[in-house]
Length: 278
Image 1 (spheres, rainbow, N blue to C red):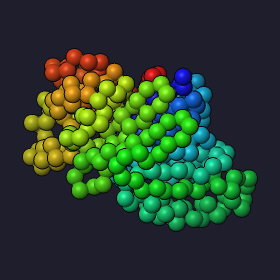
Image 2 (cartoon, one colour):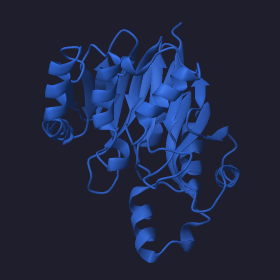
Image 3 (cartoon, one colour):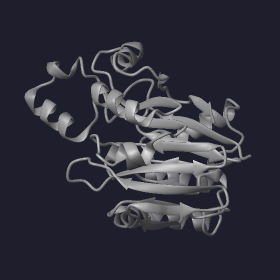
């Protein structure tokens, strides 16, 4: 049986926080990481995890990326992902999968850093392909498969922005990652019985304290603790991990308690560098 490990790299939100960076999760199968999203600080978290012996692999193994959507808190770390592991010695190009617009984003990043690439290639030893990226824009269904796992995508609902949720099916179990989304009708059937559900969430109890404009936005494109409890009851995951958490003054325990009012399964509010085995 393969060994599958989940590393939470960024458990936070678009709001800069002292102890949380924005979205990033690595699912590692037999030592090969598959990165979901790349917010600010994600590569640094990989370096920290390796130095703390939380993982055996290092940043040079970051060669496969799945982007849920193109908001900055899920993608602003892309230049870091392209060029820092290259400096560390990555030999292979980055394979990037995601919604429409990803190819243009990567192309423009490479253009913006053309001088960086030119100087590094001419001034000191570096691999020929380690800075490159190949983008594949995907829709619903099977979007990636190798000898270690299969990855499926489902359309998420994050307003008028193209967005995806992902399901990773490994020999050790199944991991579903919501990305940013309000509840989607097909999601429960698609994710039902997964071993781990990693889902975004905002506090229902603090929602009324938000301004009317923010209430309209969050209710349209995100998932409340009350809505997530309903989803979890339909899916019955082995573990429900919370990320992209909008606490709005709540503690992690209070956020969990909001879900536990209507859901009796195992719920964990994640922190950066948490590690979970399947």
